Image 1 (cartoon, one colour):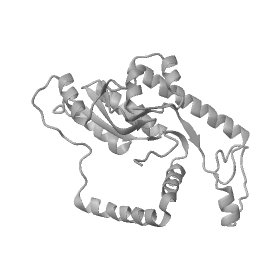
Image 2 (cartoon, one colour):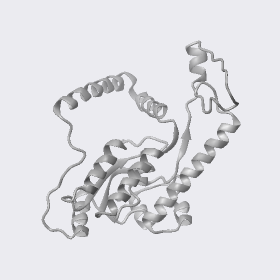
Image 3 (cartoon, helix red, strand yellow):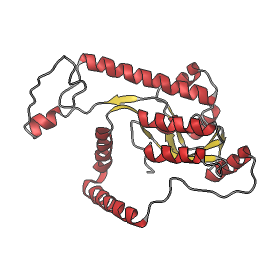
Length: 259
């Protein structure tokens, strides 16, 4: 949210920028991050037109950040929607106990001082509270979609609940406005802004050569892991993502590949 949110905020306040086109190709992620970006979209929309262009995937958090836009484009085969959330808390008990040989002793001021600890399974109280957080986040999600798409919450819930739609179905049920690519979205943004002559500014700004070079070392490590782990790399990748983003997630609970 820091990178994208700041870019949207900057574009919203720049008087030279007459419209914003947001390109989305994401299965989602942290619910909090999605909400931060959505708030920047709403802020920008008060100042100028905001048009969204979906790539291959715009699901869960990817749809969350887009629902408030003035207009949404997608392809007929874009994976769209997945209006739903889930919570994930890593349980590393077997890893620490059996593999690492670690045990934990506790001194607590109250029964829930170690709320959602990762070295043990969740207890009933924690499951209850986590479930309440998930349901509250889902209600916020469908409320945003209801407001952004101008439909009732009941209608959003009926097509939500984690259901995944292709772009052609998404158009029929009102999740998108029109089929088209990025250029179509740019043309629509110019139309809404009532301008004919314009140039395009890409944000966030491209990183400098040294930064890109340093980041490429990470890509090299990733490629080596892919070769060594083969088909298990994607499972490893997902566990790494989930271990870094525990809590309520607005993302697809599975991988999307081109195969």
